[in-house]
Amino acid sequence: MSVIVDLKKCNGCKNKETPLCVKNCPGDLMAIDPENQKAYICKEEDCWDCMVCVKLCPCSAIATKLPYQLALYKATLVPKVYEDKIKWTCTDIDGNKEEFEIKTLEI
Image (tube, rainbow, N blue to C red; front, top):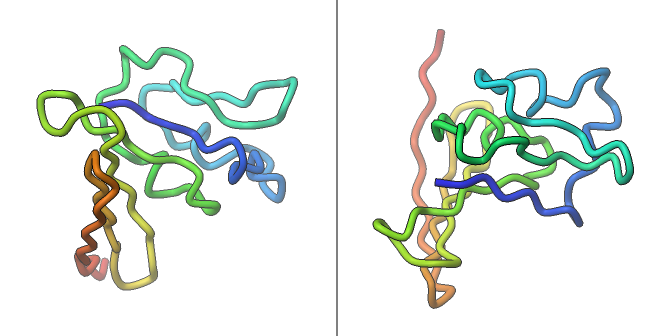
């Protein structure tokens, strides 16, 4: 998979000392571009698809592009995190969307 940052939505977590995607990426792969203050992935080939950055982005600016073996170019899987659930939106190559929800565990 591959991480895609929507530069129109990303605000670099302006209200945070360290952007959530940068702070929480277990591979230390997310960074902020000093020129535009937007997030980007440093080494896409090293990403292991944990989707922490995707799930934590408060602007819903980060998505996951599904690999060619699973979908084809332009297919995405985007989560929206709520207090009690995660709502996933899967978009196929034709733009058809399917949504599903998973309740989160209470810890």
